[in-house]
Length: 213
Image (cartoon, rainbow, N blue to C red; front, side, top):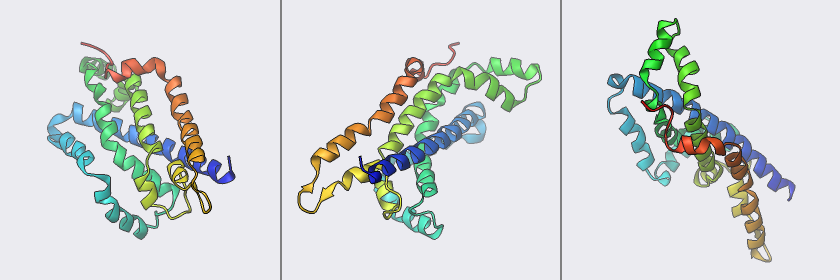
């Protein structure tokens, strides 16, 4: 592949990986807070999920204006923040497997001197590891295949895989369908590798199972 194509793959790998890590980390904390302290967050879970109901095109113009004012347009940081923000509701609801972890386990940890956060880190997180990895895979797929926000928030400085596939055009031949097909096939490799590495956690993660009462 050409240097431009390799740069596009590198950009997508950096942006998708960091955005996925941020989305899953923040989503885990949000899910834990909503499930363990429900009276303080009445209705927030539904409000968070409602963000996914808006079509992406509806918020593109305000997002472009905001990112241009903050000088985040056409930057890695801008795309990372945009990707993480739009996948956060999805990751939060996927990680609701925390609900399956008995609160009694955290209570015992608190009796032995652990703080609330310590019990979360040392007791809850290991038990929902499968759910976290499954969520990370799905969020990574969403980020890796994102096109609209990459198209509207960049102007040629940052090119992702999806943009590079769309740009496979020749002045003499028009659309280079063979090149597009080749790049599209190669672009599935990171997702396949990631899925293979976490396959033993997938069944448990997709059933939202951690510990059954």
